Image 1 (cartoon, rainbow, N blue to C red):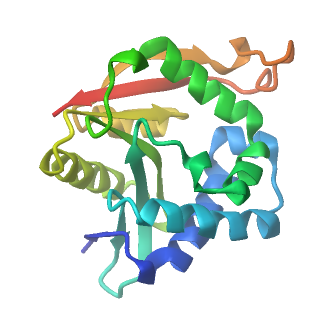
Image 2: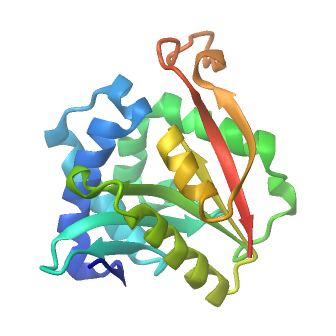
Length: 207
């Protein structure tokens, strides 16, 4: 049995550890960055603490209250870098990925016509490797859809970096509005993702 609950202060350390494990081992772009887990974890705690304050994120627990998954969300127009210098420093380790996501959203969203409180942004979703293919990702997404609608959001967007995440969102009614092949993206004349297959895709669901 899976229980989906709001991310709380009680969950921050566990969520940061699970996020670190999933992000470093399974996120395609992070594998290329290859950050030191010991360096990553303290920043992950800062990040999870920041998203907790927005009251838009959830975690999944099994019947013994062990954490099995997470979904971290922010208002699309909020900038996580505003959380302080430590967050800016953290994101600097993933400069190419941040630039790629910004390019994706600038290309396929008309940001100039979006106002605060209207578009919810799923930043990350992850499930513990031992609990995958059990429907947890879909349950997390479904809960965010319900919560987003309750909070007055009219749309939810997510950046899918793998086919697995793309399928999970599409199974919940999201539509892919565009994608960028990894090997086509350059920054400062360099193709950091040249050896990475596939694409990053933007998915959207109207509420």
